[in-house]
Image 1 (cartoon, rainbow, N blue to C red):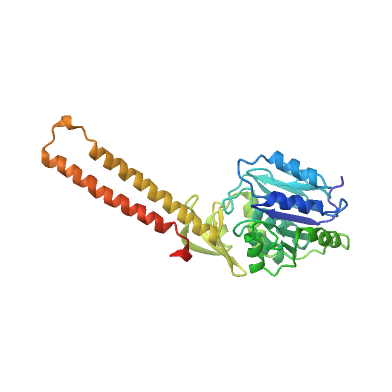
Image 2: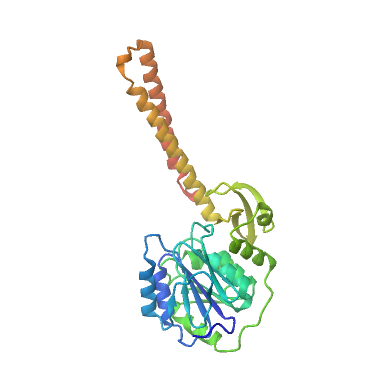
Length: 334
Protein backbone atom coordinates (compact mmCIF):
# COMPACT_ATOMS: atom_id res chain seq x y z
CA UNK A 1 0.00 0.00 0.00
CA UNK A 2 1.58 3.30 -1.08
CA UNK A 3 1.55 6.38 1.05
CA UNK A 4 -0.79 9.07 -0.21
CA UNK A 5 1.12 10.64 -3.10
CA UNK A 6 -1.63 13.02 -4.15
CA UNK A 7 -3.92 14.85 -1.82
CA UNK A 8 -7.24 13.22 -2.63
CA UNK A 9 -9.35 12.94 0.50
CA UNK A 10 -12.90 11.61 0.91
CA UNK A 11 -14.67 12.29 4.22
CA UNK A 12 -17.93 10.52 5.05
CA UNK A 13 -20.29 11.41 7.89
CA UNK A 14 -23.33 9.47 9.07
CA UNK A 15 -25.40 9.12 12.21
CA UNK A 16 -28.67 7.22 12.75
CA UNK A 17 -28.92 4.46 10.13
CA UNK A 18 -25.28 5.07 9.25
CA UNK A 19 -23.81 1.58 9.39
CA UNK A 20 -26.04 0.27 6.59
CA UNK A 21 -25.59 3.42 4.47
CA UNK A 22 -21.79 3.47 4.84
CA UNK A 23 -21.59 -0.27 4.10
CA UNK A 24 -23.59 0.26 0.92
CA UNK A 25 -21.42 3.19 -0.15
CA UNK A 26 -18.20 1.22 0.33
CA UNK A 27 -19.44 -1.50 -2.02
CA UNK A 28 -19.63 1.13 -4.80
CA UNK A 29 -16.02 2.32 -4.50
CA UNK A 30 -13.49 0.94 -7.00
CA UNK A 31 -10.55 -0.98 -5.57
CA UNK A 32 -8.06 1.28 -7.33
CA UNK A 33 -9.57 4.60 -6.25
CA UNK A 34 -6.94 7.32 -6.08
CA UNK A 35 -7.89 8.63 -2.65
CA UNK A 36 -7.95 7.90 1.08
CA UNK A 37 -11.35 7.61 2.77
CA UNK A 38 -12.23 8.73 6.30
CA UNK A 39 -15.46 7.80 8.08
CA UNK A 40 -17.19 9.11 11.19
CA UNK A 41 -20.36 7.30 12.26
CA UNK A 42 -22.09 8.60 15.36
CA UNK A 43 -22.50 5.48 17.48
CA UNK A 44 -23.67 5.01 21.05
CA UNK A 45 -21.06 4.03 23.63
CA UNK A 46 -22.70 0.62 23.85
CA UNK A 47 -21.86 -0.13 20.21
CA UNK A 48 -18.94 -2.52 19.75
CA UNK A 49 -16.74 -0.73 17.21
CA UNK A 50 -14.85 -3.91 16.28
CA UNK A 51 -18.17 -5.38 15.15
CA UNK A 52 -18.83 -2.33 12.97
CA UNK A 53 -15.30 -2.62 11.56
CA UNK A 54 -15.92 -6.27 10.70
CA UNK A 55 -19.20 -5.41 8.94
CA UNK A 56 -17.53 -2.71 6.83
CA UNK A 57 -14.59 -4.93 5.88
CA UNK A 58 -16.96 -7.66 4.66
CA UNK A 59 -18.68 -5.18 2.32
CA UNK A 60 -15.68 -3.17 1.16
CA UNK A 61 -13.19 -3.93 -1.61
CA UNK A 62 -10.86 -1.54 0.19
CA UNK A 63 -9.27 -2.40 3.56
CA UNK A 64 -10.92 -0.68 6.54
CA UNK A 65 -9.06 0.02 9.77
CA UNK A 66 -9.34 2.05 12.95
CA UNK A 67 -6.30 4.37 13.01
CA UNK A 68 -4.06 5.27 15.93
CA UNK A 69 -2.76 8.71 16.69
CA UNK A 70 -0.27 9.87 14.02
CA UNK A 71 -1.14 7.03 11.63
CA UNK A 72 0.37 7.84 8.23
CA UNK A 73 -2.31 8.31 5.55
CA UNK A 74 -2.19 5.75 2.74
CA UNK A 75 -3.94 5.81 -0.59
CA UNK A 76 -6.67 3.20 -1.04
CA UNK A 77 -7.29 2.86 2.72
CA UNK A 78 -10.55 3.42 4.57
CA UNK A 79 -10.17 4.83 8.09
CA UNK A 80 -13.01 4.48 10.62
CA UNK A 81 -12.94 6.88 13.58
CA UNK A 82 -12.27 5.07 16.87
CA UNK A 83 -14.85 5.09 19.68
CA UNK A 84 -15.06 8.14 21.96
CA UNK A 85 -12.25 10.03 20.19
CA UNK A 86 -12.05 12.65 17.47
CA UNK A 87 -10.37 11.79 14.17
CA UNK A 88 -8.59 14.83 12.68
CA UNK A 89 -6.38 15.33 9.65
CA UNK A 90 -3.14 17.20 9.10
CA UNK A 91 -0.91 16.88 6.05
CA UNK A 92 0.04 13.21 5.71
CA UNK A 93 -1.19 12.07 9.15
CA UNK A 94 -4.26 11.24 11.20
CA UNK A 95 -4.55 12.65 14.71
CA UNK A 96 -6.70 10.97 17.36
CA UNK A 97 -7.65 12.84 20.52
CA UNK A 98 -10.15 13.00 23.39
CA UNK A 99 -11.01 16.65 22.69
CA UNK A 100 -14.24 18.33 23.77
CA UNK A 101 -17.42 16.96 22.24
CA UNK A 102 -19.14 18.74 19.36
CA UNK A 103 -22.95 18.61 19.44
CA UNK A 104 -22.44 16.08 22.26
CA UNK A 105 -20.58 13.70 19.92
CA UNK A 106 -17.05 12.33 19.99
CA UNK A 107 -16.01 11.42 17.33
CA UNK A 108 -17.77 14.30 15.58
CA UNK A 109 -18.43 14.60 11.86
CA UNK A 110 -17.78 18.35 11.85
CA UNK A 111 -14.36 17.95 13.47
CA UNK A 112 -13.20 15.54 10.76
CA UNK A 113 -14.61 17.64 7.92
CA UNK A 114 -13.25 20.94 9.26
CA UNK A 115 -9.70 19.69 9.85
CA UNK A 116 -9.70 17.93 6.47
CA UNK A 117 -10.69 21.21 4.77
CA UNK A 118 -7.91 23.09 6.57
CA UNK A 119 -5.28 20.48 5.63
CA UNK A 120 -6.36 19.53 2.08
CA UNK A 121 -8.47 22.46 0.78
CA UNK A 122 -10.03 21.74 -2.65
CA UNK A 123 -8.80 18.14 -2.61
CA UNK A 124 -11.51 17.11 -0.12
CA UNK A 125 -14.81 15.54 -1.09
CA UNK A 126 -17.32 15.53 1.76
CA UNK A 127 -20.24 13.09 1.86
CA UNK A 128 -23.19 13.34 4.24
CA UNK A 129 -25.44 10.31 4.67
CA UNK A 130 -28.43 9.48 6.86
CA UNK A 131 -28.74 11.00 10.32
CA UNK A 132 -30.78 13.08 12.75
CA UNK A 133 -30.54 16.83 13.43
CA UNK A 134 -27.90 18.97 11.67
CA UNK A 135 -24.55 17.32 12.35
CA UNK A 136 -22.15 17.69 9.42
CA UNK A 137 -23.54 20.97 8.11
CA UNK A 138 -20.87 23.27 9.56
CA UNK A 139 -18.13 20.84 8.53
CA UNK A 140 -19.49 20.72 5.00
CA UNK A 141 -19.53 24.53 4.90
CA UNK A 142 -15.80 24.45 5.70
CA UNK A 143 -15.17 21.96 2.88
CA UNK A 144 -17.11 24.07 0.36
CA UNK A 145 -15.46 27.33 1.46
CA UNK A 146 -12.04 25.70 1.07
CA UNK A 147 -12.89 24.74 -2.54
CA UNK A 148 -13.88 21.12 -1.93
CA UNK A 149 -16.79 19.07 -3.25
CA UNK A 150 -20.08 18.36 -1.47
CA UNK A 151 -22.08 15.16 -2.01
CA UNK A 152 -25.32 14.48 -0.12
CA UNK A 153 -27.49 11.39 0.02
CA UNK A 154 -30.92 11.95 -1.55
CA UNK A 155 -33.08 12.66 1.54
CA UNK A 156 -36.00 10.56 0.29
CA UNK A 157 -33.65 7.55 0.24
CA UNK A 158 -32.05 8.18 3.65
CA UNK A 159 -33.36 6.22 6.61
CA UNK A 160 -33.17 9.48 8.61
CA UNK A 161 -33.28 12.54 6.37
CA UNK A 162 -32.44 15.37 8.81
CA UNK A 163 -28.70 15.60 8.13
CA UNK A 164 -28.91 15.51 4.32
CA UNK A 165 -31.77 18.02 4.38
CA UNK A 166 -29.83 20.39 6.64
CA UNK A 167 -26.87 20.41 4.25
CA UNK A 168 -29.12 20.92 1.20
CA UNK A 169 -30.93 23.76 2.96
CA UNK A 170 -27.76 25.65 3.85
CA UNK A 171 -25.20 24.78 1.15
CA UNK A 172 -25.09 24.78 -2.63
CA UNK A 173 -24.37 21.05 -2.91
CA UNK A 174 -22.51 19.65 -5.91
CA UNK A 175 -24.33 16.32 -6.00
CA UNK A 176 -27.61 15.19 -4.44
CA UNK A 177 -27.77 11.51 -5.33
CA UNK A 178 -28.55 8.00 -4.14
CA UNK A 179 -25.78 6.05 -2.42
CA UNK A 180 -25.59 3.74 -5.47
CA UNK A 181 -24.56 6.67 -7.69
CA UNK A 182 -21.84 8.02 -5.39
CA UNK A 183 -19.30 5.42 -6.50
CA UNK A 184 -19.60 6.51 -10.14
CA UNK A 185 -19.10 10.16 -9.19
CA UNK A 186 -16.04 9.41 -7.04
CA UNK A 187 -14.50 7.07 -9.62
CA UNK A 188 -14.87 9.73 -12.31
CA UNK A 189 -13.57 12.52 -10.06
CA UNK A 190 -10.45 10.63 -9.03
CA UNK A 191 -9.63 9.04 -12.38
CA UNK A 192 -8.93 12.43 -13.95
CA UNK A 193 -6.29 15.02 -13.13
CA UNK A 194 -5.50 15.61 -9.49
CA UNK A 195 -6.99 18.54 -7.62
CA UNK A 196 -5.47 21.98 -7.74
CA UNK A 197 -4.67 23.60 -4.37
CA UNK A 198 -6.80 26.54 -3.30
CA UNK A 199 -6.69 29.08 -0.48
CA UNK A 200 -8.29 28.06 2.79
CA UNK A 201 -10.11 30.88 4.65
CA UNK A 202 -8.27 31.98 7.78
CA UNK A 203 -11.25 31.28 10.04
CA UNK A 204 -11.18 27.60 9.01
CA UNK A 205 -7.45 27.37 9.67
CA UNK A 206 -7.81 29.03 13.09
CA UNK A 207 -10.69 26.82 14.21
CA UNK A 208 -8.91 23.71 13.00
CA UNK A 209 -5.80 24.70 14.97
CA UNK A 210 -7.87 25.31 18.11
CA UNK A 211 -9.50 21.87 17.74
CA UNK A 212 -6.21 20.08 17.16
CA UNK A 213 -4.45 21.81 20.07
CA UNK A 214 -7.39 21.02 22.39
CA UNK A 215 -6.62 24.28 24.14
CA UNK A 216 -7.66 27.86 23.64
CA UNK A 217 -8.53 30.93 25.62
CA UNK A 218 -11.48 33.23 25.27
CA UNK A 219 -9.35 35.59 23.19
CA UNK A 220 -8.67 32.97 20.49
CA UNK A 221 -12.25 31.72 20.41
CA UNK A 222 -13.71 35.24 20.19
CA UNK A 223 -11.66 35.85 17.02
CA UNK A 224 -13.96 33.35 15.29
CA UNK A 225 -17.20 35.22 15.98
CA UNK A 226 -19.15 37.35 18.44
CA UNK A 227 -19.04 36.74 22.20
CA UNK A 228 -22.50 36.12 23.69
CA UNK A 229 -24.04 36.30 27.18
CA UNK A 230 -24.84 32.58 26.89
CA UNK A 231 -22.92 29.89 28.74
CA UNK A 232 -21.97 26.37 27.77
CA UNK A 233 -24.52 23.83 29.06
CA UNK A 234 -21.71 21.29 29.49
CA UNK A 235 -19.11 23.30 31.43
CA UNK A 236 -20.42 26.83 32.01
CA UNK A 237 -17.86 28.58 29.78
CA UNK A 238 -18.79 31.66 27.76
CA UNK A 239 -20.05 30.91 24.24
CA UNK A 240 -18.97 32.63 21.03
CA UNK A 241 -21.47 32.74 18.17
CA UNK A 242 -19.97 31.75 14.82
CA UNK A 243 -22.13 32.44 11.78
CA UNK A 244 -21.32 31.11 8.30
CA UNK A 245 -23.67 31.41 5.34
CA UNK A 246 -26.51 32.18 7.74
CA UNK A 247 -25.82 29.03 9.80
CA UNK A 248 -25.04 29.79 13.45
CA UNK A 249 -23.24 27.64 15.97
CA UNK A 250 -21.81 28.34 19.40
CA UNK A 251 -18.26 27.49 20.54
CA UNK A 252 -17.14 27.45 24.15
CA UNK A 253 -13.52 28.44 24.82
CA UNK A 254 -13.01 25.01 26.42
CA UNK A 255 -13.84 23.38 23.09
CA UNK A 256 -17.52 22.34 23.24
CA UNK A 257 -19.49 23.30 20.13
CA UNK A 258 -23.26 23.38 19.57
CA UNK A 259 -25.53 24.10 16.64
CA UNK A 260 -28.51 26.33 17.43
CA UNK A 261 -30.85 23.33 17.57
CA UNK A 262 -28.58 21.30 19.84
CA UNK A 263 -27.93 24.28 22.13
CA UNK A 264 -31.66 24.88 22.55
CA UNK A 265 -32.22 21.21 23.35
CA UNK A 266 -29.32 21.24 25.82
CA UNK A 267 -30.76 24.23 27.70
CA UNK A 268 -34.13 22.46 27.91
CA UNK A 269 -32.47 19.33 29.28
CA UNK A 270 -30.48 21.31 31.86
CA UNK A 271 -33.62 23.17 32.94
CA UNK A 272 -35.48 19.86 33.37
CA UNK A 273 -32.58 18.45 35.35
CA UNK A 274 -32.55 21.48 37.68
CA UNK A 275 -36.33 21.36 38.20
CA UNK A 276 -36.24 17.64 39.02
CA UNK A 277 -33.53 18.29 41.62
CA UNK A 278 -35.69 21.04 43.14
CA UNK A 279 -38.69 18.71 43.21
CA UNK A 280 -36.67 15.96 44.89
CA UNK A 281 -35.36 18.31 47.58
CA UNK A 282 -38.83 19.73 48.26
CA UNK A 283 -40.26 16.20 48.49
CA UNK A 284 -37.56 15.29 51.01
CA UNK A 285 -38.37 18.36 53.11
CA UNK A 286 -42.10 17.58 52.97
CA UNK A 287 -41.53 13.97 54.00
CA UNK A 288 -39.39 15.14 56.91
CA UNK A 289 -42.10 17.50 58.09
CA UNK A 290 -44.78 14.79 57.89
CA UNK A 291 -42.71 12.09 59.56
CA UNK A 292 -41.38 14.12 62.48
CA UNK A 293 -41.18 11.87 65.55
CA UNK A 294 -44.09 12.50 67.96
CA UNK A 295 -41.91 11.48 70.95
CA UNK A 296 -40.73 15.07 71.15
CA UNK A 297 -44.18 16.03 72.45
CA UNK A 298 -44.50 19.13 70.31
CA UNK A 299 -47.24 21.61 71.11
CA UNK A 300 -50.31 21.14 68.93
CA UNK A 301 -49.72 24.53 67.29
CA UNK A 302 -46.24 23.50 66.18
CA UNK A 303 -47.51 20.19 64.79
CA UNK A 304 -50.20 22.03 62.86
CA UNK A 305 -47.57 24.44 61.53
CA UNK A 306 -45.53 21.50 60.20
CA UNK A 307 -48.57 20.05 58.47
CA UNK A 308 -49.45 23.43 56.94
CA UNK A 309 -45.91 23.86 55.61
CA UNK A 310 -46.01 20.34 54.21
CA UNK A 311 -49.28 21.19 52.44
CA UNK A 312 -47.74 24.37 51.00
CA UNK A 313 -44.77 22.35 49.73
CA UNK A 314 -47.15 19.93 48.01
CA UNK A 315 -48.70 22.87 46.13
CA UNK A 316 -45.25 24.11 45.01
CA UNK A 317 -44.20 20.60 43.98
CA UNK A 318 -47.31 20.22 41.81
CA UNK A 319 -46.64 23.61 40.21
CA UNK A 320 -43.07 22.64 39.39
CA UNK A 321 -44.29 19.41 37.79
CA UNK A 322 -46.72 21.42 35.65
CA UNK A 323 -43.86 23.75 34.69
CA UNK A 324 -41.76 20.74 33.68
CA UNK A 325 -44.43 19.69 31.22
CA UNK A 326 -44.45 23.16 29.66
CA UNK A 327 -40.63 23.51 29.56
CA UNK A 328 -40.28 20.19 27.77
CA UNK A 329 -42.50 21.21 24.84
CA UNK A 330 -40.77 22.01 21.54
CA UNK A 331 -41.06 25.68 20.59
CA UNK A 332 -43.65 25.07 17.89
CA UNK A 333 -46.01 23.55 20.48
CA UNK A 334 -46.03 26.58 22.81
